[in-house]
Image (cartoon, rainbow, N blue to C red; front, side, top):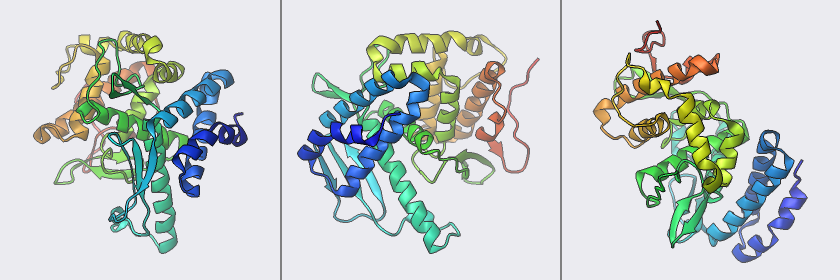
Length: 321
């Protein structure tokens, strides 16, 4: 097991250069400790140690400063790609909790937990980016692939980083909340979200499902060393589930050559509210994809993560033979 003493020693120079508040130091240490010990059973001790060093190296290169925002309406944590700074703000109120029937203690606990998720999400993002030709790109498979797509950090594909980072934060922290998120104005259709995040609320459990269909060990190798493992990782997935696109019994609204990129495309369309009039159909199509994939995986609780109707049982527009 990787201990905190080792991590603190490795972070000495980073803390001297950035001089963060003590509570921020604690967040950095805890993130690296929790992350390392979360992936160790998957990749093994030596690989987890190598990945820890890679994460620390990227943190040192990607965070030049921590900046506290003077005024903000709620808790906040967001990495600024331009200034290479992690901006943050803590407050005792959080507007997303106003509609929840929680007492003061419960609200305080929820605020602390949500801020922790925010910080872990940003650290996860920061630990998986690097600079190429003065351009910030992700160090994860979901942004760098065999076709060499290096989009600007403000492009749609950068949102994929944010979603995957948030799911990783939830997995590390064992966040199992189930909050109903309506995906239409009439509140007829809904999906579940792991917590009160708004940006990724409609897709976070889809990505959680996606992760359950991926080769976990190869996933972390691809994130840690995309030049060596990304092509292998994506090829393996596309070959395993290519039958979904070869099946002509269901007509998907979005079109991609490979199933991996098709799932990404649906996630981005839903998350970024692209063609909002087709939003329900995008959810429906993703639900069908995961149901078809589950013929091999056999996840028992698959349906609870897919699109639901509030006045009927969960039904998908796809029938087996």
